[in-house]
Image (tube, rainbow, N blue to C red; front, side):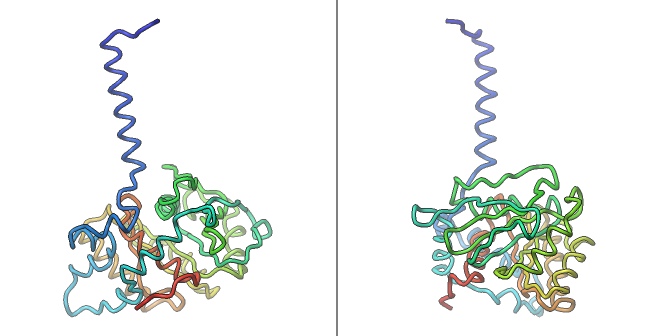
Length: 287
């Protein structure tokens, strides 16, 4: 039997090991479940479970932070909501279909939420993190901006549907407006639109255009701050305050509370799952 020289075998083994550990790091699901977060020390627990409260610690005591506490589930609520994201034979979770026009979208009765944002804001990564407890759900994530070209529908049992929308801005589909605007304006079972904003750069010109559209149509939406593991605490705090002030002064149908998340470390993911289950009518908070 042919064998590689020993030195060659060692080199190949090192390459394979590096690939293995890199793959594991990229697909790590540590802290994906709230049960893994509960035993953590208070500081780390707050940073992962309630990242907006972590930001609050760095603010002047005289600042109004009431909007940080509007949606305030307890631990039991978050644990209950998490069960909706765990598949079973009676509760399958999977990709359902894709569409490029409103007349191509599936006719579904269950409540729906959609995720919208600039290209490369981390939309597909966030959806993958939300579905991390359902490993068979295939959410394609690319380093290339503008990867998502269609409206991708994911069914969570018979309870609700999550829609991954194409990104706007760089490398957006040429027919983005014709694809997205009719969906947002006409989809009868759409309960909430999640507008994703990069926490490192805050609201950009294209985000303001998206907000103007949502406000004009009167579509209830909530702003999700992505990639919160990237900015410094100072940058993060400044962007949170600026966006909170913008929501208070310039919007009418935006939920007043921000949802900061990190798809890498699962910060804010448990809270966001709970909010999704709540706004789709599947969970009444116990507090």
